[in-house]
Image (cartoon, rainbow, N blue to C red; front, side, top):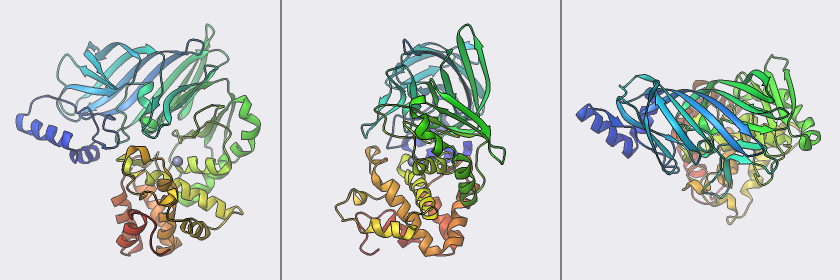
Length: 462
Ligand SMILES: [Zn+2]
């Protein structure tokens, strides 16, 4: 992962210059204040990899205040004189590196940390950041809000795609950097806090309860959650032994129940299509959240702003393979997440009394050239404002149906399973997916992808 990360980043001008400088001088240099993604140039940080986050969060619903400590165990990927973390708002009171006080400064969403001594390349180091305040969500280029989204009653909907992780913890927040997590949240009795992975312990003391969660598979920062509410909790194991933990706002409980009851069936069905389920926990967080308007595939336990329908559940569950386990290198390739999750809906519907996938493709193709569907190519959204537009989802699914019709079912599902299996817990990009499709099918597919993934406007023939 570190080698891959360096290769991917070396293509960016900032880090390329930095690496060139480092190789000439051999001295310590600051880590780059970016992962080099043109869609979100302020996201992510060069020069180190976060192996593990330990977050201790205390939240007071009445005042909305968060008091927190973050412990980041990282590895330097260059000799570092200083490095950056992403953090939006909040007040930092102290930073230490390996137990020694470190200098720090804030500029925009960047927290610059200067340790007492330079950190040699390859060195493991621990950064402790103490911070507090009332978190504020961020507005994305498409106008939607993400991050720590507080509701009127003090409950919190936490979903960080694409850049909201920085609203509640200091992080290296581009999906290039994946880490394991321990997230402990302390809330007043009667409230619950739900995060990713497994609940390690739940301890009540002096009117407050601490929920201590562990995510032991690598996770991109945007997929972390620590959602807080007065939830109804349901906890059980599936027939195959997978622990399921659902947390549901009482206002949504009745509508959510029949859909959430399908989680074991959906996980089992997708496992037959995509290969072994990548994580050691599953479940759902269902909030009654006004003004959010979306669900997110938070790792192991998707979050829904209201009771989901079955297609939404199928979609967010499919992301556990496509987006969560296999992550993006750059946001431009968002169709690798959204097209695949949308195609999972097509497959589910086709096998559960809905239209077939070929009919779905034909119906989409019949839409006029002026429809939003054709406004930009699925594989090249053009800007960060477009990544959650229609094409990466619907045209992304069309690409997969065209691929399936071209190479046949056997090769097609082998491609999906191999993609999820070979890249499990890692990354993938569009060119790698095209190459894998050609390798497994034995066919030249460049014109198919040129037309359906990268072509401007509506293709001339279906
Ligand atoms: Zn999605």
